Length: 104
Image (cartoon, rainbow, N blue to C red; front, top):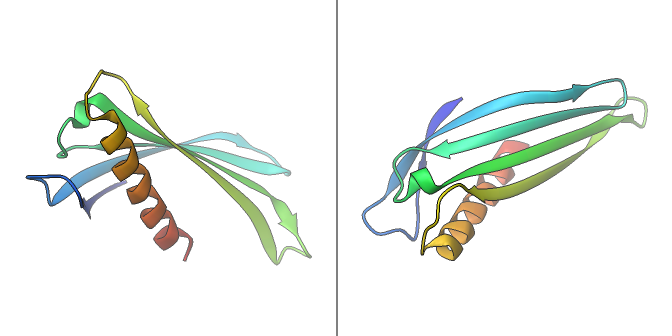
């Protein structure tokens, strides 16, 4: 999946392209486990990190009317950068905002 998202808090960068790759790690009657890796394409130092999310959906409850979903998010750094703390905070804030929209 590819989309463009606004970026706040970074100089010289108003938006960035994002590419998300989804992979189903487990699919059974009891649960579904999905890993998502998001790569930002245009933000400063975008080659130093990626965002990883794991979503675990547990089996249906209450006569198939609802289920439980747990989402884990992390910023993975693959290169050294002096801006790690700033990039982690902005990335996690962006993931939380995106997640709120995704679950609505």
